[in-house]
Image 1 (cartoon, one colour):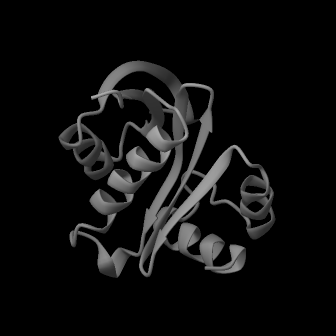
Image 2 (cartoon, one colour; image 1 turned 90 degrees about the vertical axis):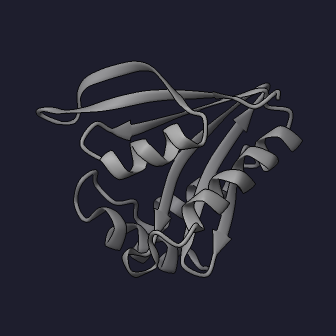
Length: 135
């Protein structure tokens, strides 16, 4: 997918909460050798790997394609790619009001390790999650 298509999908998935990423922002992210893109026809994930840590920056699956295992597949590919890059642990932030994403991550072995109050908007915290990749 081109940065324009990725940005369009990001907007469809997140609306204006949190602010969707523009094509230029996505293109800038992907220009860094530290960041990587994993994509499927109906979704994508952008991750970053630095030293022995990885970060899941964003995950987007087309609304009409949800609950079909796409996100699970993207996360599995993220783990493998991060491990291949030398990461032994991974982190992410998810909005406290995104119950579906939080359940998805918990089912994949991610655990809450922190919280940033009012990070996304008043009353919407960022939940910090971590997953061990060494196993």
